[in-house]
Image (cartoon, rainbow, N blue to C red; front, side, top):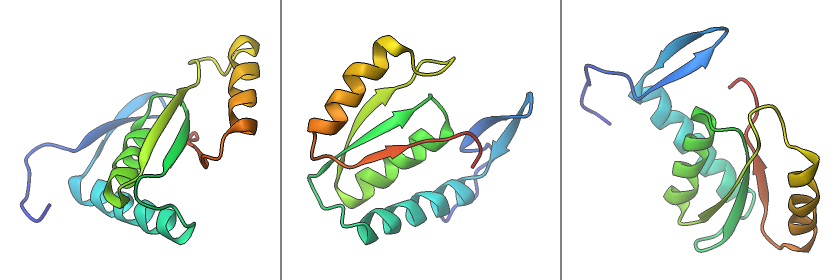
Length: 108
């Protein structure tokens, strides 16, 4: 990411508008997340469930998992929240899984 780019890495929806996110910021966040995953004991080849809405933070978490050699297992929450229909099977999967779970949240 050493080279300068004329366009942002992402456009993140913030407070009713779109905010450009630089390549430098995205790269720094991915590296910080990857270091956090390693500190938590996530190892190469391990599956980690990602639960959240489709947003920039999800992509950054996914790249961080790839950086440490882990595999993401996405669980997409509905736009208006996780419905009861989805909540039960996801809850059951989480209880019976040995995979760690990361949840993307609103904000950065």
